[in-house]
Amino acid sequence: MLEDPAGTYRFNYGDYLQWTGDDRWELIGGEPFCMSPAPSRIHQALVLELGSQILAFLRGKQSQVYAAPFDVRLPRANEPDSEVDTVVQPDVAAICDPAKLDDAGCRGVPDWLIEVISPSTNVRDRVQKRDLYELHGVREYWTIDPAERLLTIHRRQSGGGFGPPETRPARGLQDVSLFPGLRIDLDPPFEL
Image 1 (tube, rainbow, N blue to C red):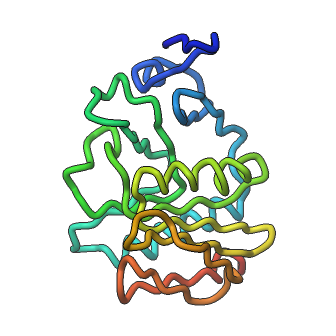
Image 2 (image 1 turned 180 degrees about the vertical axis):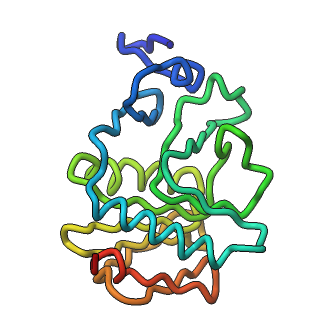
């Protein structure tokens, strides 16, 4: 734990690994965010369905998919893990480079991240994490708002950051530009 010039405390992955209890946490720039209480039933149904469809498509391929809780460490440079101050647990993460994977999760930026919006994480997922993922080079970032039944897609442009967001109804088959041929069916979780 470090104290910054403003007198607030910043945490790192070394601190994070020492925390006990049942709560799940994320660190963004050294600031902790509690992810409790547990997500809603529809949130979990979406995460399970998305992960299952992506897993079936990627089976036998080099790319891998993981669902939360799964630590994604986003180092600023080459600092050791214990000093990394950003650790997120996206709902779904697809990683194309297996060298980024280890027993602790993923060190480095995943290629595709999906967050299912909860009332308690709305602003963090739509703004703070979007900016964080754009900064770190995520190629595709989806947010799904089950209450509004909306899908927002952010795609990395050839010049750098995300292009304009694409927002559409979270219904039916959705193409994944990162994985040609993968079409995600968003209807099943809403039919339970």
